[in-house]
Amino acid sequence: MTRILVVEDSPDLAFGLRTNLEIEGYDIRVAGDGYTALREFDDFRPDLVVLDLMIPELNGYGVLQTLRERGSSVPVLILSATAEETAKIRGFRLGADDFVTKPFSVLELLARIEALLRRAGSAKAGTLEAGDLNHLRFGSNEIDLTSRRVYRHGKLVDLSPKAYDLMIALMNRRGGVVRREDLLREVWGHRREISTRTVDAHVVELRRELEDDAANPHHFLTVRKAGYRFQL
Image 1 (spheres, rainbow, N blue to C red):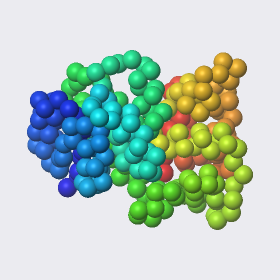
Image 2 (image 1 turned 135 degrees about the vertical axis):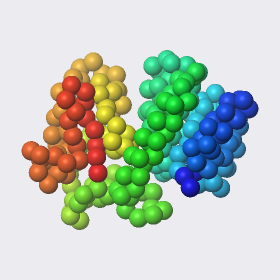
Image 3 (image 1 turned 180 degrees about the vertical axis):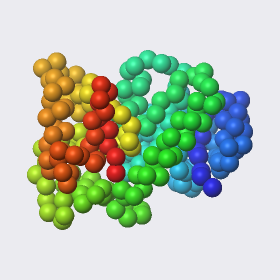
């Protein structure tokens, strides 16, 4: 049974989320504050986390940052009472996979959860081995997250630092489409002298170094009029 950790300090909302998710067949555990959430995460080992931002003790940003610093790639869906762009950008920069604003449709939330779980299921094939959180693999490529080194067919690839950061940013979205503007903000920061063509140039580098056929890429895909996405 798929396990979901719900981190929400409102008893009524937590009850509603638990009830609806259990009806859908998920195994649910609820935490009402940040530190309890981290303990439950270690004990419950969820497949997905639904995380409210404004929780006591340690807020949602702190929980998310801690999970990612530990090396966890478990999908995290943020719930927030604010729709401000700065909140969304901060969440995504810390490694969130989706962002839903309160009040929300239960049907939409369920659909987003299902989509994240599907992506995570596909991404598991990219993990080097169970429990090894510092290595990823896709195709003939192997990534050592600790040393920031990338190997292809066992040989070290000379990726530029920004191409590496771009690769990780795309992989963290687990198949989601990312706009060039969002990649610019995440990888290069708010620098006006950097254009979206810079993103395109680094995608070309990733394809040249990591694809079997750079002209017909399988992993680093262009989504016309939208941006880029990564697939295994």
